[in-house]
Amino acid sequence: MNSSTYSTRQRILVAAEELFARLGFEGASLRQVTAAAGVNLAAVNYHFGSKEALIEEVFRRRLDELNGRRMEALARIAGQPQTVLEDVLTAYIQPALELSHDGNGGALFMRVLARAFAEHDDTLRTFLSNNYGHVIRQFTAEFGRLLPHLSKDELYWRVDLVTGALTHAMSGFGLIRRRSDVSESSHREQTVQHLIRFAAAGLSHP
Amino acid sequence: MNSSTYSTRQRILVAAEELFARLGFEGASLRQVTAAAGVNLAAVNYHFGSKEALIEEVFRRRLDELNGRRMEALARIAGQPQTVLEDVLTAYIQPALELSHDGNGGALFMRVLARAFAEHDDTLRTFLSNNYGHVIRQFTAEFGRLLPHLSKDELYWRVDLVTGALTHAMSGFGLIRRRSDVSESSHREQTVQHLIRFAAAGLSHP
DNA sequence: CGTATCCTCAAACGATCGTTTGATTTTCAC
DNA sequence: GTGAAAATCAAACGATCGTTTGAGGATACG
Image 1 (tube, chains in turn orange, brown, blue, cyan):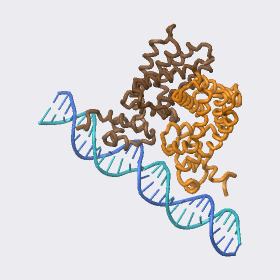
Image 2 (cartoon, chains in turn brown, green, purple, cyan):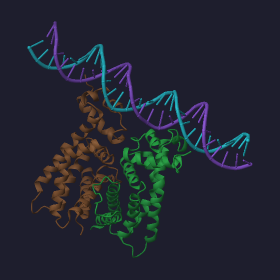
Image 3 (spheres, rainbow over the protein chains, first blue to last red):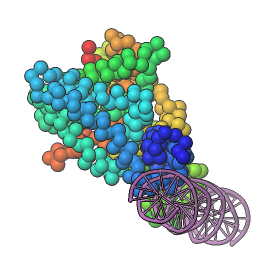
Image 4 (cartoon, each protein chain N blue to C red):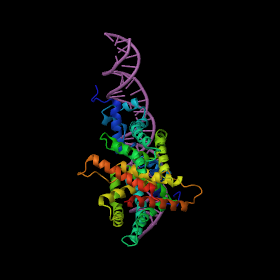
């Protein structure tokens, strides 16, 4: 009998996400993960095959929905004459902010994502590039359409810098915290607006 | 007889910096470090006391000079009437870019620094805050003087986002690489100019 | 009821980790 | 040259790691 209504597989994924965010992929052991999930140690290798495969599944579970929402939002505005830079940035940022405030471990996952960028794990980088690289490419193409005065080099430069600022801000190791007199939804809306204005200014300056 | 003109201590620090950058603090073992340095395994605990103390010494060796140069550059321009935002950004960025192109492991150290931000190691964060927090505070104060129309909240927001972009760009996990038809010094100058214009636009937009 | 399949479990495997020990060698002031 | 201090060395310590094993329980289907 399970000690919960959730399956062993689900319980492992939830516990792994939290411990990977707090301790890193190498810092969190499978013994810690399975203890937090309330399952047997061998369950990870039974259900996922290896620790590496568990890590990839943690990413897949979140990124499939996150990047799906991004592509939906982009498809609604791409190529249209009235679309402006802020619209494209909103399509990229809003889904990530919603995820990081969904009260369901999403904020933890954004920290996991930031770790994945800082650690130069090649197998993980290849996994992310293979599965989600088309998202970055489509957004960059739309940025290029809206910033025709920029050379290809210049565009790559600025998109790269914006990516750094966004990753930093959304991973939660920034300094900004919600003040107690501001509601959760209002704070999220403020965060999106700050990010979009900052990124738009950095992308489009002369 | 040493197999080199450098001391055991120095050889350990150089090898540790490279391996920490490539593999992370937990990923790089003391056996790998001492093997790369060509010294005995016990030398780390003899000369530094522990692995944690070795990590702090790797930071101290670089950050003392880096932040010293930043403070020198800031002192030359702070509070002066003709100083503009780009000057303050140059004082902050130029020493870091010089370090990351000094051909002496400086680029590797910038990646170590990015890892330190991504990993939420409390003892390391406390060490950095205690020893180098005054640098960030003085730069933020000067930014505030030059951007008086911004509220304190707004200023913190933007400085935080700029920090993210800079850390990202200088840690080398950005996409931008030097093209073969551009000289090393010219590429460094281009990088500084890109960063400064991007950061200035993000900081000062209306 | 019988049995095949999925799942869980305690236990152990070999490998690697940071650290310590005690002996040995090197260095250097006197 | 001599003795104390500093430095290096091979070897071992206990702990923890990811993974595997084989037995046994749970479940579903004929």
